[in-house]
Every structure is written in C-alpha cells, then in structure tokens.
Image (tube, rainbow, N blue to C red):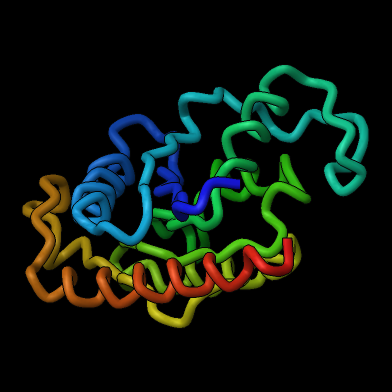
Length: 187
C-alpha cells in the first residue's frame, strides 16, 4: 500500500450536457493543489455501466462482467472519494447509485465526502447518499459542499462557483483525508 493517500473525485452523472463534469473538474483542480493526498478524476461515464447486470450479488465479490471488473479495479485503489452529484427528483442520480451498487468490498472502510448541486443545493441527494454509502461500509464526513443552480451557475448552465465554496470544500477535503488515513488502519 502506498503511503500517499489516493482520493477519487467521482463524476456522479452520465446525463448528456451534465454539469457534474464541470463541478468535478473544479473540485479536482482545487484538491490537486493540496500536498496531503493525490487526487484523481474518475468519470463513471467512461465505464459505460449498464443497469446492474451481475448475476451474483456484489457482496460475494464474484464479478463476471468486464465492465464490473474494470470499475472494481479503479475504485479499489483509492483510500477515499468525493462524490459530485446532481439532485434529480429529490435524490442522487440513478447513474451514481447504480455505480455504487455494482461493487461492495471495494468501498469498505473508506472515507467519502459530497459536492452536490441543484435548486436546493443538492442537499436531498446527499441525504440519500449518506444512507447508501453506510450500507457499503463507507464513512461519510459531516461537511459537504452544496452549490445552487441559481447562484453558482450563470443562466443555470455556466458554472461559476462563488468564492465562499472554496473554504467549505477545503474543510471537507481535510475531513476526507483525515478519515481516509485513519480508516487505512482497519483495512
């Protein structure tokens, strides 16, 4: 195991013209300036995951599909994650939920933080994600970043985050790194 922490910034939407990629790039850009961990952008769209199609439950760890094996190999190498999620219909995106559901042990005892966006800052998406990640034995940190479609996106499309989010993001990343380091001792 490398001594340097590895944290994935996960793009949590595959929707055409999604904003998640822009938000994740912003997170990754700020996070990459930190020296306490290595950050990598992981886009679930790159894996072309269908709706969960494994014949055996992920909790048994017997993956049979090439896309599942590729997804598992990437996710397993990280100590923690930052999920960037939109809020769709008072929850997270189906694509992110599906990507989480594909795996089980790869998520265990790892830290996760959230950056969300929507008309209500994406808070309901984060509420649901907290329940989901608990079931796959992830430790979610308290601080999250909520971005407003009204105030952080010009005309609801062009991403222009307010400066106040940088401080919150930094505090959330501090927590993710701290918990990721601590959780290494139980893996």
